Image (cartoon, rainbow, N blue to C red; front, top):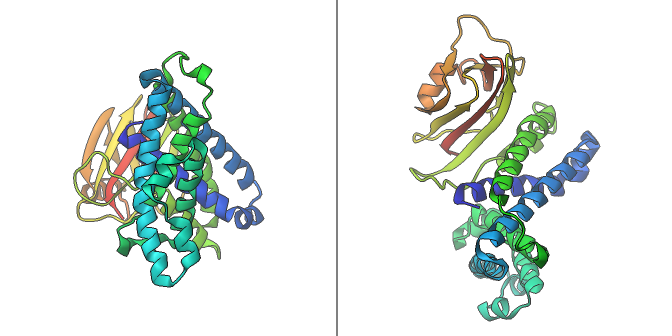
Length: 328
């Protein structure tokens, strides 16, 4: 995977972990969530297997495995050190001993033992969460350790007879990630919105927080990126909820359109209705970048509401991807 793909998969893993931790609570509110979690688990497993095949086809199984192991080990050692220092300040010698591993222990461990060690570091670091920030460990570091560990595990579980399998797995990764984006945008996001404005709104807020992409691999400023991607078959309208996105002075909206031109407009509720005379932003096929202030003026975002509607002005399908950069 490239940096951008890894950043997005890191977001997938945060959502997966959120569902795993909150499954019992969410299932009591809507039982369908157990099916959705299974769907997401399958998509992620397929992504990691395809990525493992793509790497193996390019560099060979042994080299690919070592690359992923080195990436996992480097990050695990960093977090292990910061985590041990944190638990020492608490006087929690048990957790301190569990999270701390030496480089020798990682390097000499058998393949699956190394994976287990990394996940033990991840588990204890996740429990500490933001408390590790003063020790130089960020939430992104913790998420990325899980990502690196899962990529490594996918390599381990890949039968060696598949190492010489046909190429084109890179394209399969792209297709699977597009499927995952569609699933999140059109199914899971919509389902979780049932919680908005209810006594369980805190669960919705936590879910939205996990939908943010931590890394900004394309550079240019600080902060996180938030991506919304999907398809709209014309003539039709879909919408995305932007209530969880907090802009910074450096924020921009990068709009990528393929298929047909679209029109963007905001509304106060997810009713998809356009109010004549209100702001309407015509976006042609291609990529356009606006400051978030310009984007808000063109679409009526915030003034008209936080639901952004995407209307296909053609007949065939249109694909949209909107990236909000440097958001909190």
